[in-house]
Image (spheres, rainbow, N blue to C red):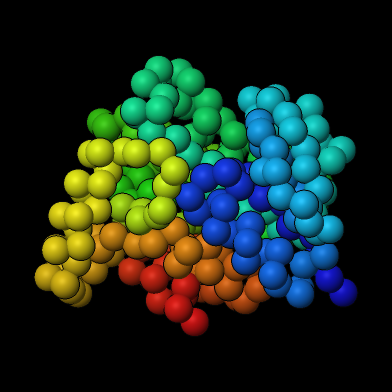
Length: 219
């Protein structure tokens, strides 16, 4: 029996890669997209819900599926206001997890970030850590939180600082081994592949570091 997946964040780097994988995967018959803007992709599997994501809890009746994939995230450059930033990086995934629990969805896969820590003095890391805590508090049976390092992607928007960081990491990656391997940069498609694998296989860890993501994404 084919499955239905919910995807949040389909317009982002990882989300767009994940969408293509789900559309090509015969295990899925429907991919529900909840987003602010249309993907403008004509495909029989896609069911789009163009909404205000800050009001996601108003769409509980439509939030039904076998699995939820959450790739929501922003940057300080795109969202300098901390209140809005928190609404995106904490509020949307936390609300999605509550809806998944309420609607009996037993698989929830979400992208967080390396360094996530609810007790961190760094706003970005603290917000991600609090998001992870809120998601885990729902006790959804198959919950997987991915903590990637710097994400490499072919983005449409030009981010000079990010390009410089990616170039630097390309030089540094070969030197990162052992416990430091989790700091290697990772491609968005690798993360997407790992998310699909986790949704369709049992894994003994709920929080997955970047080096583990890379391994699962190459299975």
